[in-house]
Image (tube, rainbow, N blue to C red; front, top):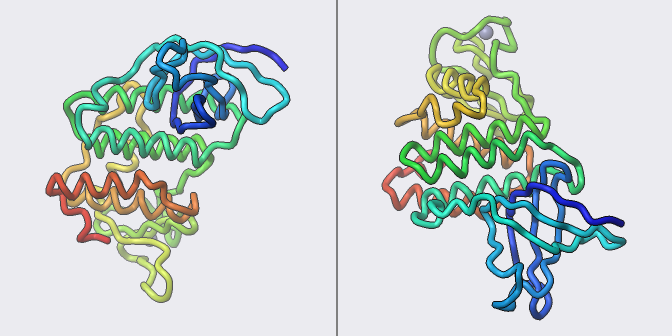
Length: 261
Ligand SMILES: [Zn+2]
């Protein structure tokens, strides 16, 4: 039972009791926690104004309850640009949902925080939201322990040199164009272009300061979007609601990614 301070992502909030707010936070030191911000719905509360998709120094009390109590908050970055347009907002919410879904409570994973901050920051700027979000999303998957071995062919051990390649999201392996598995029964993977595979590999090799590099354009963007969705669905079990939001916003923007589904 103790009071502690941590730099934390504010992932989610929802009303709780009459005047409280229930928050999902992710701290550098503490990992994911649930915390109650008591009285935060009252306009004069010193906790009023705390909102999701922000980053703050939080004073938290950990007692007997599984829920901690938020006692103080100093905003570090509110990422205001995320609220200006549906596209960055939808992607930023998806990343918040993924962190919430993939990590257990009180299991620290400090590297998550810089990836999310870098993604939220880039989403406020000009650039490809899909590229920023999917590459950050794959790094979050990696930090959660998911890292497909999509480097060499499972059958011959060689590095693929031509399209298409077969990526298997069930067993986390891949196949070159000469050893594509016959598609029978339940789908366990898909064929993507060599360019799609190379883009994914470049993303996985990125340092967090280079997030947003190697833009996935056109059909490569479509393929990597679809692949990410299927991978999440297979390994996380259910799709966060924000994934549907992302798809709707992408479709509104005329990206027509639905044709792949
Ligand atoms: Zn092969």
